[in-house]
Length: 363
Image (cartoon, rainbow, N blue to C red):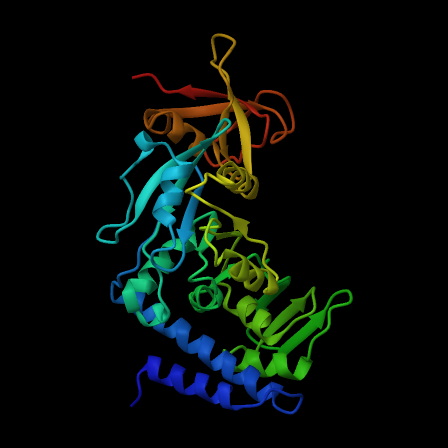
């Protein structure tokens, strides 16, 4: 009996040898659904078996992953955009060799992660590629680094795609409500366009036979499968074409731009566009400012800069762990509450410009 990986390879081979046209699109769509179902099964088995995946704990500062082929200059970029004394090591990478650093930009801080080079075949475990890419599921931004000698990002994007990472995309506008009976009903809202028969076939491939599926956008089989699975992550990305001081750079730039990408032309040797890169990173990750106000006196301190979506607990952890352990309640005046000095708990999400006062238990 073939393994899951062997089954997936067979199905992928069938897609490659099938010419895509109107007559074959249903067949190809069903094969893609079978591949996605097998990949989901493999992932579930890996988790049960205590697989070797790695992860990053979501901290209050955003995490940015530097990804690319080996020897394209990721380490030099890390050293250029972070301070030499800002290296940190308390991450959950165990034996995976990742070099972290901290980038400061204006009043914001970012965790920059220099990941091992990714080679073609990463999804098969080559070069520990699957483990490297698994780290990226929890970053806030992926910076894909290329150079004039390794300038085609196609295989990297495919590796990310296979691991459920969607670069510069948005989640499908659809909802799936399963039920005990009543059959499968797929309805559209607005001007969304899709092949109803094909989507019904894909749904049944996943064992969905009683459900109401509401679609709010035009839908391809790939996007629909992502929506059905619900385990994809959607992460913004920047592209760098490094070593712009080399003679081969121009040709490489033309190729990358022909793919519809707009890479940052970087040269560490000539210090070209390093500040632009820092600016672009900061602009891609949304941050907010929260003012910590002592309960017994006004505060003249600068606001704390945290990731958009942070909770009161996240802010407390950034100040001191004791703030969480002895937390009693907090009051907020600002956009995240209905009235001034509203009492909130640790789970409350803060918004930009909030004035936050934390009250701790004595003892």
